[in-house]
Length: 324
Image 1 (tube, one colour):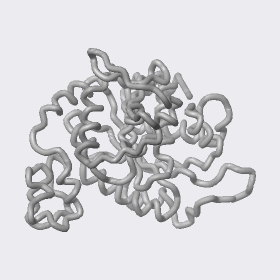
Image 2: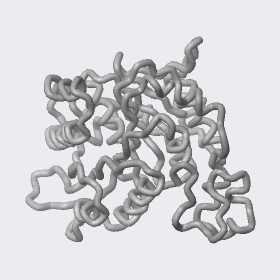
Image 3: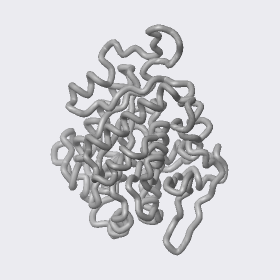
Image 4: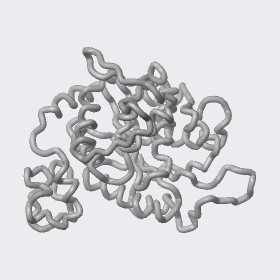
């Protein structure tokens, strides 16, 4: 639905996703996009100017997506952010998983509160070059359920984009919820003017996960977001047992799916108990030698992404001189 384009699977006589009657007219009844169109922002939005001004100081924006929950998307987002920060990049991690914000836990920031200044909301900093923003910092109780409809979720995402003062960033990593719902449509529309470098999609080798990843790839193509690559997580168990696999990838797994759908495959991350422990403890898997199996794989994916995308020469120099 890039630039208000009518979705391919829309009903006949679709009024268009930017129309005031989108999702509400008689012709919208039964359309698979009805709810998303009804709740998505429409028409000229003055807040988009404020968002564009904020994002003007952000060089690259990367979405982290998944078709299903529980595939390690937030773990990957956290470790990607840790890795980029350790390469001396200025990094921001934005958690827009409104109903299931796990980023504060995975960055070791539980119990932190958001502070405001005359410049806007201040991110919570793990390190001087790694800032984080999440609805998890706004909940009075970590066990509190966030029971919000689409418009309120969209409103908070917009507020994050226009009110958070990130300063100069090399990378803004956006951890999105699973699926292709309001939050995904909103983040794409809100950032449309400033551009999104692309999306990394996280899956597991199971066919039941790959079925939904195909939908995620389709979503990206429809809204004009480049798929930077697919990560197959939990791809085998790191244990001293020969050829022991937790999930069966004999049907080809994510690599075969990427070949079929014409998107890059970044690689496989093994199911490493030490990586799980690092996420639970809110620390980088690149510190010390505990994550001996998963850390080199993740490092290789990140360096591959930097080189393939040919991001500017200074950034490439960071990757070569400051290995994680």
